[in-house]
Image (tube, rainbow, N blue to C red; front, side, top):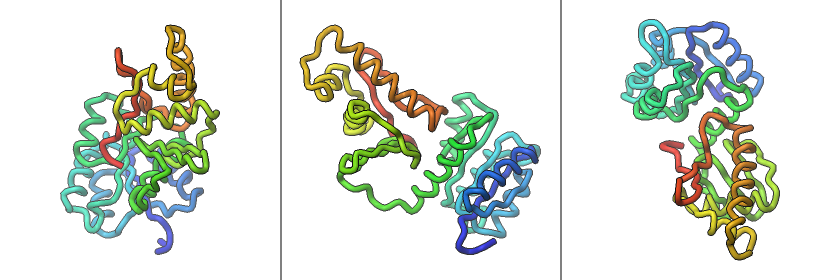
Length: 239
């Protein structure tokens, strides 16, 4: 593999899935090594250094969870700190929590959207070498807003927001993961006094923002409803 390329390990016991990932990522300029079992992944990791690993969970023999555990324990050469992305058909919340607890940086469920997966992989790679966020850039949970340039992105993918959508997002991001009430959102964004009907306007804009975010990442609700309080963008566990 060329030393100037980003090296990615793909491990999935479904050969077709591994080859699809290889094709998608090589098209983005990455160097990709495929293997089809957890044991093979560990042997490969001991012999080579990678910038990121994509692991299936349900594999014969050593599963993806155990591969992740051994990597984070330092049993896979110089790869202990590389980003790990689980790609699995296991959709239960317990499995996702376990994956993050073991040290995964992201968890994507099958079937996956190719564009979304590539965007999330790029985000993990950027996060490994990311510079400090400038003061005029708001960033929470993978969403970034550049207030100077009036641009927005999710996992590095550009979001096309109207001015009011942008201002609503900014209010949520400024809260740093804390909930923001509909009253606060309306009065700060619309610059009008909050009335009984104002809540509907806020709901419409939250719905629009959720739709645009889901076009990039539909794996979870990125704007949460805090019942009786308002809305928030929660901070992620890692990255």
